[in-house]
Amino acid sequence: MQVKIDTKEKFTVLLPQEPHIYDNMAAELAATCTKYLRNEVKNVVLNLQAVTAIDEGAAQSIAQLQHDFYEQHASFVICELKPALEEIFEKLELMEYLNITPSESEAWDIVQMEEIERELLDDEDIAFQA
Image 1 (cartoon, helix red, strand yellow):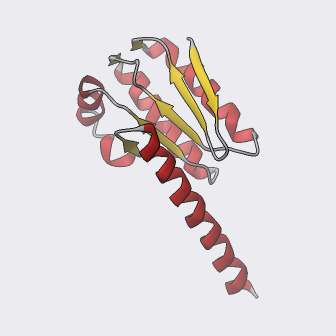
Image 2 (cartoon, helix red, strand yellow):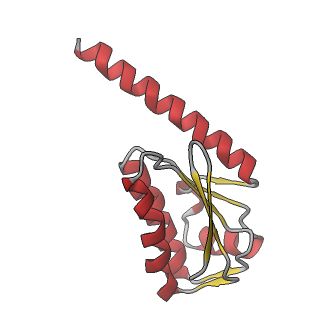
């Protein structure tokens, strides 16, 4: 699976170049995304602007990625989701669990807000334990 990668200061943008994400591609996409959890900058924005179709298994895999990232205190935001993909996520009842924005710039805003939230929560934990 071909993926363009754009590294920013607080996150990495992954832009799949395939028009259809099939079930058998989901593992490769997950491996590409999760390797960023080992980096200093762990946050990932998955830009799906080039994707026009997705298999249900691949959609579920993306939802699992979101969960995995949040478990590791990192952001995972999906942006530029086409209506056909949105329908699949809706059908699988995954929309409410995903962080989806219309544009990459709004995804950046979400990452920034979540970074601030994590910093504040970490500060509160230290103050509470003292």
